Image 1 (cartoon, rainbow, N blue to C red):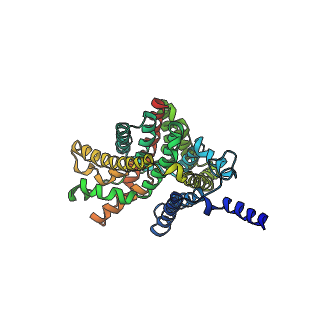
Image 2 (cartoon, one colour):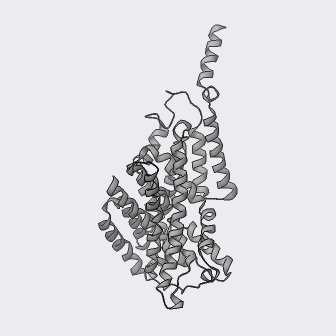
Image 3 (cartoon, helix red, strand yellow):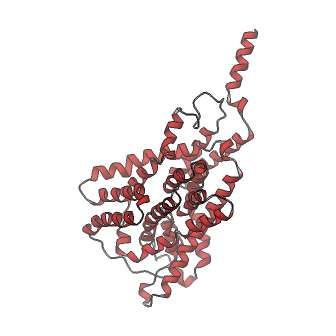
Length: 381
């Protein structure tokens, strides 16, 4: 009987019930909320569902030494997480993004690239604010990139500058990407007048296939020479786009923009979620990062909208005016922020479609966030 009792006691020590704390339960609840938002609200389900389930996986209480936890060397989850820690996954996602992106809107309206640059103000604004709150320069740089509204870029930079903050930064970045419609719309309405929201922009010109092929080559050379430290992200982004536009590598483009990016997105979401173990994640530092991430999104949106209003002051011809509602699309959340521009524009005028115009600063924001990450890595790495 004693042997049976001892065996049962030993078995109990290995169960999640014996090792459970309120922090584990809190993180599991947050994971369930993420999954619910992804399924019910359809807020970035491809991100929130894997991250939410990953949170549940990472917060199942385990007895240390079983070699199954994400922070235990040699475990399966730990090996999969190396793609996040070592920065393997983000360039592969950028390859897929490039293979899915049509830069025609930007090529036809090159002036709109300035909006994508202006929206990166959120990155550097959050960087300065993080510094004032006591974060080290490298930590502040990693936190600031959340304002670029680009999860892979945030993961890539934080893995280089502040790997100990990676979980909080990644979850913050993806969470606010999912909340783009909720965060941006009130700011856009506050900063624009009814007259400005009714501005109708000229239809973009038709872009030739030759221009589409030349753009990724010239774009990569120019940006890479300016910011060599952004090479992994910029190189894969423009290479993926060349595969799409060349017309002779359709199979490669289809793979990069389909099965490859789907697999990597699944792994990055699951492992990022699993890395939020209660004892590592539930800290005052994580709360500060979430606050700074929100502020960076707000600053980025304000910067984009106000910059369009500034540009309009120097445009005399009314036909060439830019609708400030596309300013929010300067962040890198493709195509969600562009859809917000379209949605708010249609509310003001049901016949005024802004999506084709908003995609220009939106894809410019993808390039801009990668360039900003390169700049921060070059100075702080």
